[in-house]
Image 1 (cartoon, rainbow, N blue to C red):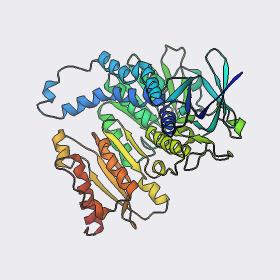
Image 2: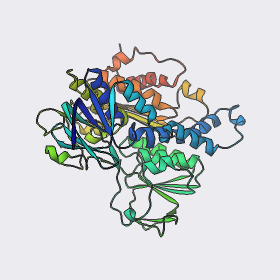
Image 3: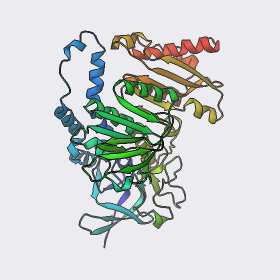
Image 4: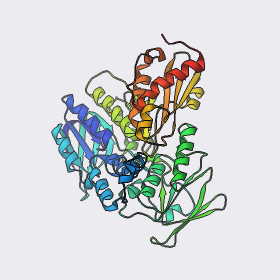
Length: 473
Protein backbone atom coordinates (compact mmCIF):
# COMPACT_ATOMS: atom_id res chain seq x y z
CA UNK A 1 0.00 0.00 0.00
CA UNK A 2 1.31 3.42 -0.96
CA UNK A 3 0.81 6.44 1.29
CA UNK A 4 0.14 10.03 0.22
CA UNK A 5 0.92 12.66 2.87
CA UNK A 6 0.49 15.68 0.61
CA UNK A 7 -2.78 17.10 2.04
CA UNK A 8 -3.66 19.44 4.87
CA UNK A 9 -7.36 18.57 4.72
CA UNK A 10 -9.18 15.51 3.39
CA UNK A 11 -12.95 15.43 2.86
CA UNK A 12 -14.98 12.22 2.53
CA UNK A 13 -18.03 12.91 0.38
CA UNK A 14 -18.35 15.44 -2.44
CA UNK A 15 -21.97 16.42 -1.96
CA UNK A 16 -22.96 20.05 -1.34
CA UNK A 17 -21.67 20.03 2.25
CA UNK A 18 -18.36 18.34 1.45
CA UNK A 19 -17.74 20.57 -1.57
CA UNK A 20 -18.34 23.74 0.44
CA UNK A 21 -16.11 22.62 3.32
CA UNK A 22 -13.35 21.85 0.81
CA UNK A 23 -13.78 25.20 -0.93
CA UNK A 24 -13.64 27.27 2.27
CA UNK A 25 -10.63 25.34 3.60
CA UNK A 26 -8.83 25.78 0.28
CA UNK A 27 -9.47 29.53 0.42
CA UNK A 28 -7.48 29.46 3.67
CA UNK A 29 -4.37 28.41 1.73
CA UNK A 30 -4.70 24.76 2.76
CA UNK A 31 -4.13 21.89 0.33
CA UNK A 32 -7.40 19.98 0.13
CA UNK A 33 -8.40 16.64 -1.37
CA UNK A 34 -12.00 15.44 -1.61
CA UNK A 35 -12.93 11.75 -1.88
CA UNK A 36 -16.04 10.61 -3.73
CA UNK A 37 -17.14 7.18 -4.93
CA UNK A 38 -20.22 8.35 -6.84
CA UNK A 39 -21.16 11.60 -8.59
CA UNK A 40 -19.55 14.85 -7.47
CA UNK A 41 -22.43 17.08 -6.41
CA UNK A 42 -24.25 14.54 -4.26
CA UNK A 43 -27.84 13.48 -3.77
CA UNK A 44 -29.39 16.94 -4.11
CA UNK A 45 -27.96 17.61 -7.56
CA UNK A 46 -28.90 14.33 -9.18
CA UNK A 47 -31.58 12.49 -7.20
CA UNK A 48 -33.45 14.98 -5.04
CA UNK A 49 -33.65 18.80 -5.05
CA UNK A 50 -32.97 19.53 -8.70
CA UNK A 51 -34.75 16.75 -10.63
CA UNK A 52 -37.77 16.81 -8.31
CA UNK A 53 -38.37 20.51 -8.90
CA UNK A 54 -38.16 19.99 -12.65
CA UNK A 55 -40.86 17.32 -12.41
CA UNK A 56 -43.12 19.60 -10.36
CA UNK A 57 -42.78 22.74 -12.45
CA UNK A 58 -44.99 21.92 -15.49
CA UNK A 59 -48.04 21.15 -13.36
CA UNK A 60 -47.47 24.21 -11.19
CA UNK A 61 -47.26 26.52 -14.21
CA UNK A 62 -50.40 25.09 -15.81
CA UNK A 63 -52.33 25.64 -12.59
CA UNK A 64 -51.13 29.23 -12.24
CA UNK A 65 -51.90 30.06 -15.87
CA UNK A 66 -55.33 28.47 -15.47
CA UNK A 67 -56.14 31.00 -12.74
CA UNK A 68 -55.60 34.02 -15.03
CA UNK A 69 -58.48 34.99 -17.33
CA UNK A 70 -57.21 35.52 -20.84
CA UNK A 71 -54.10 33.46 -20.33
CA UNK A 72 -56.09 30.37 -19.33
CA UNK A 73 -57.85 30.34 -22.69
CA UNK A 74 -54.50 30.21 -24.49
CA UNK A 75 -53.64 26.82 -22.97
CA UNK A 76 -55.15 24.27 -25.33
CA UNK A 77 -52.77 21.31 -25.19
CA UNK A 78 -51.34 19.03 -22.54
CA UNK A 79 -47.93 18.62 -20.97
CA UNK A 80 -45.24 17.39 -23.34
CA UNK A 81 -43.96 14.52 -21.22
CA UNK A 82 -40.85 13.94 -23.30
CA UNK A 83 -39.87 17.61 -22.99
CA UNK A 84 -40.62 17.65 -19.28
CA UNK A 85 -38.42 14.62 -18.63
CA UNK A 86 -35.70 16.06 -20.86
CA UNK A 87 -35.74 19.22 -18.77
CA UNK A 88 -35.51 17.05 -15.63
CA UNK A 89 -32.48 15.31 -17.09
CA UNK A 90 -30.84 18.64 -17.93
CA UNK A 91 -31.31 20.02 -14.41
CA UNK A 92 -29.74 16.84 -13.08
CA UNK A 93 -26.74 17.42 -15.34
CA UNK A 94 -27.74 14.30 -17.29
CA UNK A 95 -26.11 12.48 -14.36
CA UNK A 96 -22.71 13.63 -15.56
CA UNK A 97 -20.58 15.35 -12.91
CA UNK A 98 -17.91 16.80 -15.21
CA UNK A 99 -19.12 20.36 -14.63
CA UNK A 100 -18.86 19.98 -10.86
CA UNK A 101 -15.45 18.34 -11.22
CA UNK A 102 -14.32 21.36 -13.23
CA UNK A 103 -15.54 23.62 -10.42
CA UNK A 104 -13.51 21.69 -7.84
CA UNK A 105 -10.44 22.13 -9.99
CA UNK A 106 -11.13 25.85 -10.37
CA UNK A 107 -11.11 26.37 -6.58
CA UNK A 108 -7.95 24.35 -6.09
CA UNK A 109 -9.41 21.15 -4.65
CA UNK A 110 -8.14 17.74 -5.81
CA UNK A 111 -10.72 15.04 -6.54
CA UNK A 112 -9.83 11.53 -5.37
CA UNK A 113 -12.14 8.89 -6.85
CA UNK A 114 -12.99 5.94 -4.63
CA UNK A 115 -14.52 4.80 -1.35
CA UNK A 116 -12.89 6.53 1.61
CA UNK A 117 -12.59 4.86 5.02
CA UNK A 118 -10.90 6.18 8.14
CA UNK A 119 -7.97 4.03 9.19
CA UNK A 120 -7.07 6.00 12.31
CA UNK A 121 -6.62 9.67 13.27
CA UNK A 122 -6.22 11.80 10.11
CA UNK A 123 -5.66 8.65 8.01
CA UNK A 124 -7.97 7.56 5.17
CA UNK A 125 -7.73 4.50 2.96
CA UNK A 126 -9.27 5.06 -0.47
CA UNK A 127 -10.38 1.99 -2.40
CA UNK A 128 -10.61 2.47 -6.16
CA UNK A 129 -13.01 0.61 -8.47
CA UNK A 130 -10.30 -1.92 -9.33
CA UNK A 131 -9.88 -2.80 -5.64
CA UNK A 132 -6.52 -1.08 -5.20
CA UNK A 133 -6.07 0.98 -2.04
CA UNK A 134 -4.08 4.15 -1.45
CA UNK A 135 -3.60 5.52 2.05
CA UNK A 136 -3.85 9.29 2.51
CA UNK A 137 -2.86 11.29 5.59
CA UNK A 138 -4.08 14.78 6.44
CA UNK A 139 -1.83 17.07 8.44
CA UNK A 140 -4.65 19.23 9.81
CA UNK A 141 -8.20 17.87 9.52
CA UNK A 142 -10.59 15.33 8.07
CA UNK A 143 -14.17 16.28 7.16
CA UNK A 144 -16.98 13.74 6.80
CA UNK A 145 -19.84 14.72 4.49
CA UNK A 146 -21.29 11.37 3.46
CA UNK A 147 -24.97 12.31 3.66
CA UNK A 148 -27.93 9.98 4.01
CA UNK A 149 -29.94 7.36 2.13
CA UNK A 150 -33.59 6.35 2.19
CA UNK A 151 -34.88 4.32 5.14
CA UNK A 152 -36.68 1.07 4.30
CA UNK A 153 -38.88 0.32 7.33
CA UNK A 154 -39.36 -3.24 8.67
CA UNK A 155 -42.76 -3.84 7.07
CA UNK A 156 -43.73 -7.41 6.18
CA UNK A 157 -42.61 -8.10 2.60
CA UNK A 158 -41.31 -4.61 1.85
CA UNK A 159 -37.66 -5.63 1.59
CA UNK A 160 -38.55 -8.58 -0.60
CA UNK A 161 -40.21 -6.68 -3.47
CA UNK A 162 -39.07 -4.09 -5.98
CA UNK A 163 -39.73 -0.61 -4.65
CA UNK A 164 -38.89 2.99 -5.51
CA UNK A 165 -36.82 5.23 -3.28
CA UNK A 166 -36.05 8.91 -3.92
CA UNK A 167 -33.47 7.99 -6.57
CA UNK A 168 -35.86 5.79 -8.50
CA UNK A 169 -38.79 8.21 -8.41
CA UNK A 170 -36.79 11.24 -9.55
CA UNK A 171 -35.10 9.39 -12.42
CA UNK A 172 -38.04 7.31 -13.72
CA UNK A 173 -38.36 7.26 -17.50
CA UNK A 174 -42.06 6.41 -17.66
CA UNK A 175 -45.11 7.67 -15.80
CA UNK A 176 -46.61 5.05 -13.48
CA UNK A 177 -50.32 4.50 -14.02
CA UNK A 178 -50.94 3.83 -10.31
CA UNK A 179 -48.50 5.14 -7.71
CA UNK A 180 -48.63 4.36 -4.00
CA UNK A 181 -46.57 6.71 -1.82
CA UNK A 182 -45.58 5.54 1.65
CA UNK A 183 -44.86 8.66 3.69
CA UNK A 184 -46.38 12.13 3.71
CA UNK A 185 -43.19 14.10 4.28
CA UNK A 186 -41.43 16.33 1.78
CA UNK A 187 -40.30 13.65 -0.67
CA UNK A 188 -43.64 11.87 -0.55
CA UNK A 189 -45.87 14.87 -1.17
CA UNK A 190 -43.65 16.43 -3.83
CA UNK A 191 -43.38 13.24 -5.86
CA UNK A 192 -47.05 12.38 -5.44
CA UNK A 193 -48.02 15.70 -6.98
CA UNK A 194 -45.30 15.64 -9.63
CA UNK A 195 -46.32 12.32 -11.12
CA UNK A 196 -50.04 13.02 -10.76
CA UNK A 197 -49.78 16.26 -12.73
CA UNK A 198 -47.57 14.53 -15.30
CA UNK A 199 -50.27 11.96 -15.98
CA UNK A 200 -50.46 9.20 -13.35
CA UNK A 201 -54.08 8.06 -13.18
CA UNK A 202 -54.12 7.05 -9.50
CA UNK A 203 -51.89 8.38 -6.73
CA UNK A 204 -52.38 7.44 -3.08
CA UNK A 205 -50.42 8.71 -0.10
CA UNK A 206 -50.29 6.66 3.11
CA UNK A 207 -49.07 8.55 6.18
CA UNK A 208 -49.15 7.00 9.67
CA UNK A 209 -49.32 10.38 11.43
CA UNK A 210 -52.58 12.39 11.52
CA UNK A 211 -51.33 14.95 9.00
CA UNK A 212 -49.24 15.36 5.89
CA UNK A 213 -45.95 17.14 6.65
CA UNK A 214 -46.22 16.00 10.30
CA UNK A 215 -43.19 18.01 11.47
CA UNK A 216 -44.86 21.28 10.47
CA UNK A 217 -47.86 23.32 11.51
CA UNK A 218 -51.06 21.27 11.39
CA UNK A 219 -52.90 23.69 9.11
CA UNK A 220 -50.21 23.37 6.43
CA UNK A 221 -50.66 19.63 6.10
CA UNK A 222 -54.43 19.97 6.12
CA UNK A 223 -54.45 22.63 3.40
CA UNK A 224 -52.05 20.61 1.26
CA UNK A 225 -54.27 17.53 1.62
CA UNK A 226 -57.28 19.57 0.48
CA UNK A 227 -55.36 20.79 -2.56
CA UNK A 228 -54.31 17.22 -3.37
CA UNK A 229 -57.86 15.92 -3.14
CA UNK A 230 -58.95 18.56 -5.67
CA UNK A 231 -56.58 17.11 -8.27
CA UNK A 232 -57.42 13.50 -7.49
CA UNK A 233 -54.66 12.43 -5.10
CA UNK A 234 -56.04 10.20 -2.36
CA UNK A 235 -54.62 11.06 1.06
CA UNK A 236 -54.82 8.47 3.84
CA UNK A 237 -53.55 9.66 7.21
CA UNK A 238 -53.48 7.99 10.60
CA UNK A 239 -53.06 4.53 9.04
CA UNK A 240 -50.10 2.17 8.77
CA UNK A 241 -48.86 -0.06 6.00
CA UNK A 242 -48.47 -3.55 7.46
CA UNK A 243 -47.83 -5.86 4.50
CA UNK A 244 -46.62 -5.66 0.89
CA UNK A 245 -46.83 -8.37 -1.77
CA UNK A 246 -45.62 -8.53 -5.36
CA UNK A 247 -45.40 -11.73 -7.40
CA UNK A 248 -42.75 -10.40 -9.79
CA UNK A 249 -40.91 -7.17 -10.53
CA UNK A 250 -43.29 -6.35 -13.38
CA UNK A 251 -46.41 -7.40 -11.46
CA UNK A 252 -48.69 -5.08 -9.47
CA UNK A 253 -47.92 -4.43 -5.82
CA UNK A 254 -50.57 -5.12 -3.19
CA UNK A 255 -50.31 -3.11 0.03
CA UNK A 256 -52.35 -3.95 3.12
CA UNK A 257 -53.11 -1.28 5.72
CA UNK A 258 -53.76 -1.82 9.42
CA UNK A 259 -57.47 -1.09 8.90
CA UNK A 260 -57.71 -4.04 6.49
CA UNK A 261 -57.75 -1.96 3.30
CA UNK A 262 -55.74 -3.27 0.36
CA UNK A 263 -54.30 -0.91 -2.26
CA UNK A 264 -53.18 -2.13 -5.68
CA UNK A 265 -50.53 -0.08 -7.48
CA UNK A 266 -47.94 -0.36 -10.22
CA UNK A 267 -45.17 1.31 -8.23
CA UNK A 268 -44.62 1.95 -4.54
CA UNK A 269 -42.46 4.87 -3.41
CA UNK A 270 -40.98 4.47 0.07
CA UNK A 271 -40.37 7.94 1.51
CA UNK A 272 -40.48 7.60 5.29
CA UNK A 273 -37.16 9.14 6.28
CA UNK A 274 -33.39 9.03 5.92
CA UNK A 275 -30.51 7.12 7.51
CA UNK A 276 -26.92 8.36 7.81
CA UNK A 277 -24.35 6.87 5.44
CA UNK A 278 -21.79 6.34 8.18
CA UNK A 279 -21.75 2.55 8.29
CA UNK A 280 -18.73 1.84 6.10
CA UNK A 281 -16.35 4.73 6.60
CA UNK A 282 -14.13 3.39 9.38
CA UNK A 283 -15.60 5.31 12.32
CA UNK A 284 -14.73 2.45 14.67
CA UNK A 285 -11.03 3.13 14.07
CA UNK A 286 -11.37 6.46 15.87
CA UNK A 287 -13.69 5.30 18.62
CA UNK A 288 -17.06 6.24 17.08
CA UNK A 289 -20.06 4.02 16.43
CA UNK A 290 -20.75 3.33 12.77
CA UNK A 291 -24.14 3.59 11.12
CA UNK A 292 -25.37 6.44 13.32
CA UNK A 293 -25.51 10.21 13.10
CA UNK A 294 -22.25 11.67 14.39
CA UNK A 295 -22.70 14.18 17.19
CA UNK A 296 -20.84 17.46 16.70
CA UNK A 297 -20.26 20.72 18.54
CA UNK A 298 -21.12 24.14 17.14
CA UNK A 299 -17.88 24.20 15.14
CA UNK A 300 -18.86 20.87 13.52
CA UNK A 301 -16.11 18.95 15.38
CA UNK A 302 -17.03 15.35 16.15
CA UNK A 303 -17.77 14.73 19.82
CA UNK A 304 -15.73 12.04 21.54
CA UNK A 305 -12.69 12.36 19.28
CA UNK A 306 -9.48 13.72 20.79
CA UNK A 307 -7.43 16.35 19.04
CA UNK A 308 -10.16 18.41 17.35
CA UNK A 309 -9.24 17.13 13.88
CA UNK A 310 -12.47 15.37 12.79
CA UNK A 311 -15.37 17.43 11.42
CA UNK A 312 -18.80 16.27 10.24
CA UNK A 313 -21.01 18.41 8.00
CA UNK A 314 -24.42 18.00 6.41
CA UNK A 315 -26.87 15.18 6.92
CA UNK A 316 -24.29 12.85 8.47
CA UNK A 317 -24.38 14.83 11.74
CA UNK A 318 -28.19 14.86 11.98
CA UNK A 319 -28.47 18.52 13.07
CA UNK A 320 -30.56 19.73 10.15
CA UNK A 321 -31.36 17.45 7.22
CA UNK A 322 -31.61 20.03 4.43
CA UNK A 323 -29.03 20.89 1.80
CA UNK A 324 -28.68 24.56 2.63
CA UNK A 325 -28.04 23.80 6.31
CA UNK A 326 -25.32 21.35 5.29
CA UNK A 327 -23.67 24.02 3.16
CA UNK A 328 -23.90 26.47 6.06
CA UNK A 329 -22.30 23.97 8.42
CA UNK A 330 -19.60 23.36 5.83
CA UNK A 331 -18.77 27.05 5.73
CA UNK A 332 -18.42 27.02 9.53
CA UNK A 333 -16.22 23.91 9.49
CA UNK A 334 -14.05 25.16 6.63
CA UNK A 335 -13.54 28.51 8.32
CA UNK A 336 -12.67 26.85 11.64
CA UNK A 337 -10.13 24.59 9.94
CA UNK A 338 -8.63 27.63 8.22
CA UNK A 339 -8.11 29.26 11.62
CA UNK A 340 -11.12 31.53 12.02
CA UNK A 341 -13.13 31.73 15.24
CA UNK A 342 -16.75 31.05 14.31
CA UNK A 343 -19.64 28.90 15.51
CA UNK A 344 -22.87 27.66 13.96
CA UNK A 345 -26.30 28.55 15.29
CA UNK A 346 -28.35 29.45 12.23
CA UNK A 347 -29.10 25.83 11.31
CA UNK A 348 -30.67 25.24 14.72
CA UNK A 349 -32.32 28.60 15.35
CA UNK A 350 -33.74 29.18 11.89
CA UNK A 351 -33.87 25.97 9.87
CA UNK A 352 -35.68 26.92 6.68
CA UNK A 353 -37.45 24.62 4.27
CA UNK A 354 -39.69 24.85 1.23
CA UNK A 355 -42.00 22.11 0.02
CA UNK A 356 -42.33 22.82 -3.69
CA UNK A 357 -45.83 21.48 -4.08
CA UNK A 358 -48.72 23.56 -5.36
CA UNK A 359 -49.49 25.27 -3.04
CA UNK A 360 -45.98 25.64 -1.68
CA UNK A 361 -45.38 25.23 2.04
CA UNK A 362 -42.50 27.35 3.33
CA UNK A 363 -41.41 27.33 6.96
CA UNK A 364 -38.57 28.48 9.17
CA UNK A 365 -37.80 28.24 12.87
CA UNK A 366 -40.21 26.84 15.46
CA UNK A 367 -43.78 25.70 15.09
CA UNK A 368 -46.19 26.95 17.73
CA UNK A 369 -46.13 23.62 19.57
CA UNK A 370 -42.33 23.44 19.51
CA UNK A 371 -42.05 27.01 20.78
CA UNK A 372 -44.39 26.29 23.68
CA UNK A 373 -42.54 23.04 24.45
CA UNK A 374 -39.30 25.04 24.67
CA UNK A 375 -40.78 27.12 27.48
CA UNK A 376 -41.47 30.32 25.55
CA UNK A 377 -44.50 32.48 26.19
CA UNK A 378 -45.99 32.44 22.72
CA UNK A 379 -48.17 34.77 20.70
CA UNK A 380 -49.34 33.83 17.22
CA UNK A 381 -50.82 35.69 14.29
CA UNK A 382 -52.37 34.24 11.13
CA UNK A 383 -53.47 35.81 7.86
CA UNK A 384 -54.91 34.47 4.65
CA UNK A 385 -52.16 34.27 2.04
CA UNK A 386 -54.67 35.05 -0.67
CA UNK A 387 -56.12 38.09 1.11
CA UNK A 388 -53.62 40.57 -0.33
CA UNK A 389 -53.68 42.68 -3.46
CA UNK A 390 -50.56 40.89 -4.64
CA UNK A 391 -52.32 37.53 -4.47
CA UNK A 392 -55.25 38.91 -6.43
CA UNK A 393 -52.93 39.90 -9.27
CA UNK A 394 -51.73 36.29 -9.56
CA UNK A 395 -55.19 35.04 -10.53
CA UNK A 396 -58.42 33.66 -9.18
CA UNK A 397 -58.80 31.39 -6.18
CA UNK A 398 -55.44 31.96 -4.45
CA UNK A 399 -55.75 30.28 -1.06
CA UNK A 400 -53.64 29.32 1.93
CA UNK A 401 -52.82 30.43 5.44
CA UNK A 402 -49.68 32.10 6.74
CA UNK A 403 -48.63 32.26 10.39
CA UNK A 404 -46.02 33.84 12.63
CA UNK A 405 -44.94 32.41 15.99
CA UNK A 406 -43.72 35.17 18.31
CA UNK A 407 -41.79 35.26 21.58
CA UNK A 408 -44.25 37.39 23.55
CA UNK A 409 -41.67 38.65 26.01
CA UNK A 410 -39.00 39.69 23.50
CA UNK A 411 -41.47 40.62 20.77
CA UNK A 412 -39.44 38.80 18.12
CA UNK A 413 -40.43 36.15 15.60
CA UNK A 414 -39.24 32.61 16.36
CA UNK A 415 -41.12 30.75 13.62
CA UNK A 416 -43.07 31.30 10.42
CA UNK A 417 -45.07 29.18 7.99
CA UNK A 418 -46.51 30.27 4.64
CA UNK A 419 -48.90 28.27 2.43
CA UNK A 420 -49.67 29.45 -1.09
CA UNK A 421 -48.28 29.78 -4.62
CA UNK A 422 -44.69 30.96 -4.73
CA UNK A 423 -44.48 31.63 -0.98
CA UNK A 424 -40.99 30.14 -0.83
CA UNK A 425 -39.69 33.45 -2.13
CA UNK A 426 -41.11 35.20 0.95
CA UNK A 427 -39.40 32.87 3.39
CA UNK A 428 -35.99 34.52 3.58
CA UNK A 429 -37.47 37.69 5.06
CA UNK A 430 -38.72 35.60 7.99
CA UNK A 431 -35.34 33.87 8.26
CA UNK A 432 -33.58 37.24 8.48
CA UNK A 433 -36.05 38.46 11.09
CA UNK A 434 -35.46 35.37 13.25
CA UNK A 435 -31.67 35.34 12.97
CA UNK A 436 -31.44 39.11 13.41
CA UNK A 437 -33.96 39.08 16.30
CA UNK A 438 -35.72 42.00 14.66
CA UNK A 439 -38.49 43.25 16.93
CA UNK A 440 -42.04 43.71 15.73
CA UNK A 441 -41.72 47.41 16.47
CA UNK A 442 -38.84 47.66 14.00
CA UNK A 443 -40.64 45.53 11.41
CA UNK A 444 -43.48 48.05 11.57
CA UNK A 445 -41.18 50.47 9.76
CA UNK A 446 -40.20 47.96 7.03
CA UNK A 447 -42.80 48.86 4.43
CA UNK A 448 -43.57 46.09 1.90
CA UNK A 449 -44.00 47.07 -1.74
CA UNK A 450 -47.50 47.25 -3.21
CA UNK A 451 -49.01 45.23 -4.80
CA UNK A 452 -46.78 42.29 -3.86
CA UNK A 453 -47.67 39.20 -1.87
CA UNK A 454 -45.06 40.30 0.66
CA UNK A 455 -47.60 42.90 1.78
CA UNK A 456 -48.72 40.09 4.07
CA UNK A 457 -45.99 41.30 6.45
CA UNK A 458 -47.94 44.52 7.02
CA UNK A 459 -51.13 42.53 7.44
CA UNK A 460 -49.41 40.33 10.04
CA UNK A 461 -48.47 43.38 12.08
CA UNK A 462 -51.87 45.02 11.79
CA UNK A 463 -53.56 41.80 12.87
CA UNK A 464 -51.11 41.39 15.76
CA UNK A 465 -51.71 45.00 16.84
CA UNK A 466 -55.47 44.47 16.99
CA UNK A 467 -55.36 40.97 18.50
CA UNK A 468 -52.99 41.85 21.34
CA UNK A 469 -53.93 45.53 21.68
CA UNK A 470 -50.43 46.96 21.17
CA UNK A 471 -49.24 50.16 19.53
CA UNK A 472 -46.09 50.14 17.43
CA UNK A 473 -44.06 53.33 17.60
